[in-house]
Length: 547
Image (cartoon, rainbow, N blue to C red):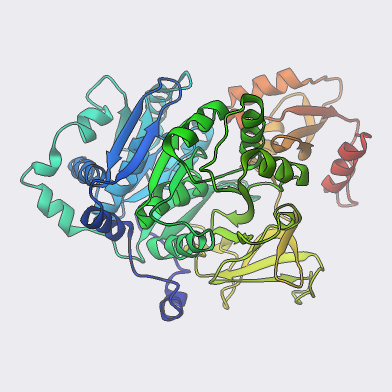
């Protein structure tokens, strides 16, 4: 794969000189863990459905990473090759990334909710050479799905199946044989280690362009975020990080996979969010920190209150992905005894703003925090002029953690010659530098922290034979923050209902979480004179109950 991470070189010298880029990779940190704390518990991975618990010390984790790295090399994976990984929070996910880093390959994490439609684009666009999937997860057969897709993916040479039964199993190809002891291991493991400016991660994000965008990150860009993030939260080697947010999102990847290794801390992975299971893990593993979206905090506080099981070790819960209601912060503080930290970020940057541990609790629900070191923010009006404190406008940022660009789509990089990146969000900044996200200029719905690609879903609705016009808009939800509502105008003489839309979307192999959960049928759409649908009016109608 030829990467076009054009946003890296122009800011390298300044980022290094300012001390924001550390010229390290995850290999350096894993090696340091093996040298300094080889027998410390590094990783505990829990599978909720089976109850299986797998543990690795740092010595064992590094040995398995080396083993899988040699196994990948034997499959023909080399420097800058893409290894796609559609796994839940299993230990194989962590090990696969570490193994890729050993040989200069690039990890492409894929959400386990993705189905044929999303995968076919991402795997083809990213030119994945290897795809790693579970055989079964939550009753779905991933092997059958991706095997059917493979003939349409010319670059995909190998499908590797965790818990598979054939010769293509993860166990047979990668984690079983002691490849690291073979004669070829030393040469493989010492030849192609990546540099800090090489692309280490390709991760897709949904936007308003009608197709997912492949975000490229290097070790320098992600570590430039993780280090100040951990410092602001006072995290260190004594911490135990519980991660139930998917590692195929930046939340899980950066702060559940990478950060514990960088800190010489311990990670606990949970593959399915079950609040009572999470409570038990916090108690048994002495978890001190977690990060997740608002629904996770709601569930945790409610179940602690209902069960009477306290979580005294959980010092901090960082909540991002949707605004945190004030009553929830108050309830969680009282029930959990935990500091609730609000934050805002993007796949392209990681966490950009978060409140400080000594901030008043009110700031967790009235702001989205203040910038991390290495981040500059400004709010501008429609003409590009900077706005004074308190005035909402378009939010731009310039950050040491800004991504390297969108793969094969540099025209979408939204970064000017001075390094300012247009977030696509609307915000205001108060006198103290704290940000409040007030809206999104990009047309995305965030359902429980998961971005719904509105343009793509609308395009599918227009394929329905009974629909003449369609729009997807958000409506508020107490638990998930937002859900998707389809507003449609039927074809003349046709009728439409929500079950038929759900059935149609499923036939299009769309992720279930992307399917609209409410339907409004109208005779006409509010529109501009040019015919553009006025979505703000639809949102107002939903809010007022007049839709």
